[in-house]
Image (cartoon, rainbow, N blue to C red):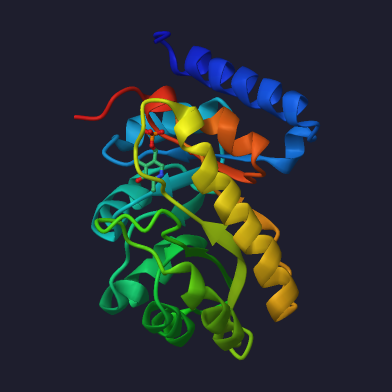
Length: 225
Ligand SMILES: *Cc1c(COP(=O)(O)O)cnc(C)c1O
């Protein structure tokens, strides 16, 4: 791993560009979410100085203490499991939620959001027992419910596949999410342009399969303790 943040960012950026080229997609069809969980505000500041604006955190409690110590003007996305009883706090700190995994949570976000809140629905496409996320056949009803709400807007889907050291083994989960998205767009008549999938070690495969948000922690900020 390169030793300065800007070198690591350059390396991640080169990988994104190469994956976009290979997939015949424009670079601006994929956004880089810098996952700063467990890292201090100084790390976020350094990333911001390198031009990053979009940051991901997985815990409300950590975000609540960290975000006020970070530079202003950044956009914060929640990518971890959120309990409905923390929705009220979450909407104060996050501009987008990637990890909506139940109708109950969606309703809690609708109740507390002060303004339009873009969300992604987290789907457990692998059926892995330990993972958060809705079952694929539960998603259409949640989209229909969201279409009756005033503040939450479903922009697409997110998934966290089971870890495999070989990214090719993960491809099937990314393509399954994309196909589910295509089907749901037709069934519900709701545009679902966003797919949040791909992390440090599998961003290339995710981009080939249609990711619009890659969530990168380790390869930008270094390993976590
Ligand atoms: C930690 C985390 C990431 C980043 O993973 P890396 O492998 O460190 O890039 C992405 N998505 C979610 C949901 C995470 O919790």
